[in-house]
Image (cartoon, one colour):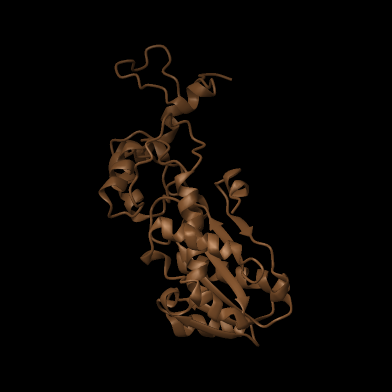
Length: 308
């Protein structure tokens, strides 16, 4: 699994694919879909598909694939290796959704929630398999939202394919278990080797599971919260855990808008507006409490000016 396309720019989403087995272009195939990393506040969410001929279902079952959440990291890596060695009849594709993609989607003006993002990603991956010539006859999906509605949505989108959507599908159908393993292995590798583009120095990588309830994760979030610029792109800043910490620990920022002047709003709440950071104290100005210039400005050799 070559992660270099995503590692080159981990602020955007990226698709990774295996070779398409020739047999999958000539025989009826089944396809499973699952994701890894839906809940964590750190790192990407990875959607995976795995497909093989219907005639090879038993062979896949004999490989002992199982729900990735029930396996250790070593077991997942070993099973992924087995899937990779079965490339004569097993194919896979992954969509890595970066933390930045997830957060900006959820916080954009027209709301695009995680369920909608998940559904669209799954549809795109099924379409990729069809466009690649895979002869899909059966699709098995681990549900996101109400299973019945999701199944109906996929069946209407892909007529002629037998679609099955079930809760815990990764423990019911080996082909979904295989997709789960591919997705989880990719996420684990991405998180472990995350390239921080921000200038954070030596980063502490002991961030626990990445889930909001994990004390190690909470401690990491506190440690790497910049009071002005928030979090590095490794963090899903749309998650309530991150938002709560920013609200309580970061500097309050007021923006100019049509309803109320930013400076007046800031003064009313006894705070400073964003504009105040760009104004220089000139002759007789208040010098009693000079603020330290943030590294964002010093690294770029930016200075305040009082006249143009």
